[in-house]
Picture 1 (tube, rainbow, N blue to C red):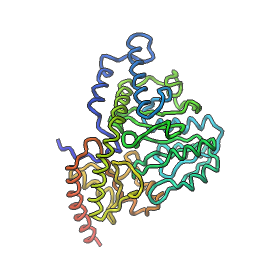
Picture 2: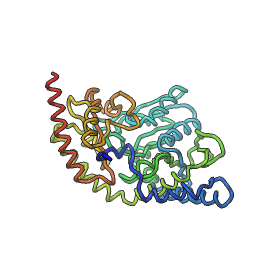
Picture 3: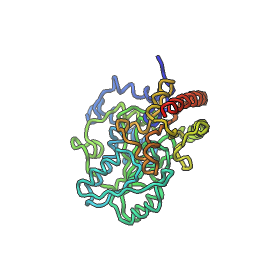
Length: 382
């Protein structure tokens, strides 16, 4: 079977074989409901408790601060909508480059008595410290700034923002979905009130995520029912996925340092190869994830390039997988001041634990050939 080189690790990751083995018993003989009082139920409850401890340890939190969800989208919604329901309507501040699962619930709140304040970024995709300070002076009740951007990989100074937020009584949340396993993620050191992570970004199964939340923060549940997850996320837990999530977090945290060094070398080599072909690499001057390259080629459509690369044996992305149904240019690039035509040409390469030097070298050769072909076709059309 044809298997393209996978350069879309920010969209999702293949299931780690060790994680799969840990999950298998919970897809067979161990089938109990964690809320049941008998032995089958007690086994399932113990497995969830163990997974919760693993997830907490991976992000420097206490197990009681970890709430399991179906993924990053639900966790982000739980904090934003749950916190808003517990506070008086006021200002909610988010960065201009947030993922849609932060941006859209914030927009929903703006239609029900809240005032939405977007915080600008500079040309490198880094949140403006001056605009952040101006936003904090407006004393928003809630704020959300992602730790690492899913498209550019640009890292944000969330710890500094959290210090300023706490001084003003602002509840600050960070979407750390793309950061976990690639850079250090420490809930306590960051000092935020809420932090979101997702299983399938770190070699775990789809359908599991977590909101790590300061116990002093009051949230209203999105899903009411039997009272699971401290009454904030009712419903019978997906035991197999949660078990896999716990193991995946443990393994991702353990190899993060060495893997970041290895991937940084491959990322920088990709940047060199792209630059030799005339590509514009976004956020190149910013501190960013060790695995991510977001770029555009002048007068070459991003979707066309992704399709050509796919047929050549390389699976890439023309931006965020969660926004792929939208024909609009990247809102992240537009916020950075990139013109619409260039933004529509953007392509994302993201590396992972199986990426190799040989794959990067072969990509460079294929990319140079394909861009020459596309440019010649563009020249003929003029």
